[in-house]
Length: 67
Picture 1 (tube, rainbow, N blue to C red):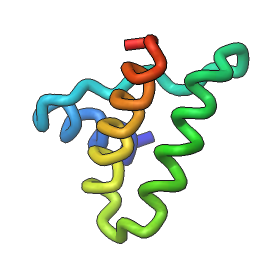
Picture 2 (picture 1 turned 180 degrees about the horizontal axis):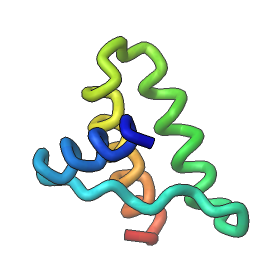
Picture 3 (picture 1 turned 90 degrees about the vertical axis):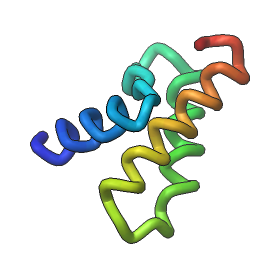
Picture 4 (picture 1 turned 90 degrees about the horizontal axis):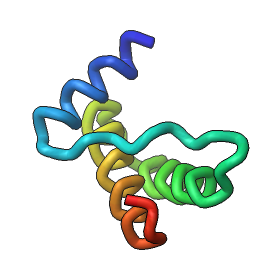
């Protein structure tokens, strides 16, 4: 939980607000979260990975008309 708080704080400071976590009843959010998770697996720095995941989730959700 502490790691998540740090990621959210860094993402907010970086100017991107992380989108809500994927909900079981929202297949679009689930797909975006899956794609973002796959994209950040090779990033060794967990802080940067969290910021990048938030950016990717936001872009994906906006591209699909959810943001």
